[in-house]
Image (cartoon, rainbow, N blue to C red):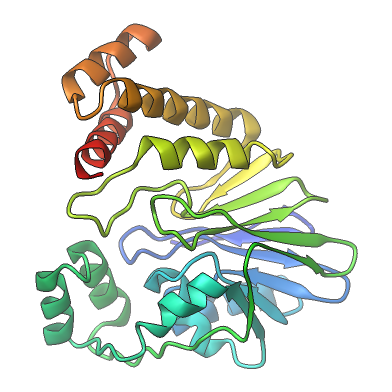
Length: 285
């Protein structure tokens, strides 16, 4: 069940749903504008957020910013009539490629077969929309290339195009007054590769870039809002695994042994999965 949580009076978020791939939606409340971060994976998702905002007496958004082009972050845009939508130029271009697509079962199955779509996303679309596939791709109205700062009145949001393995158009949203960094999916693996993967070079570059933001809270779109201490623990793990991937490219056994020696214990399930991602990234580059 989704809940709508106040991190502070100026930043709220709706929790994710794994089964239908609903990501966290962020709401930044300013004195003159309210910004929605990501549009949701369906009109129903967006409308659920509006209902939660209404229940809390919050002003509905006037702006929406997209973190990247994937369906679960953009299909709610058709419900956000009257809002100014913002995305990177790259995100808009990638969204435009979806315009010819049909979303019935046969079309989804064909794209999965050809490698354009992945089974997990096709299954989540079926669960979220049922048999009524009325989704409509709506392109953003405002674009930027590198950085865009929004003044919402008493609070700002810095949109920064950061890229990464998950998708090259990834954008993060930084709220300096709240010291909140909305990561989107930037640090996740590339799910559209022949096998799910991360590359050492892209991961290290992105981690160095994210270190430039002075944040106390970090939002993982398909996870939770975590403290700086928790994020730095994940960051250090990713950095260590990335360096091992550079030192022992494609060698899962040696990477695992070296990491276990470093941390003094057996790798856990998450670490084992990440090692596999880096091994895949080494073998596919």
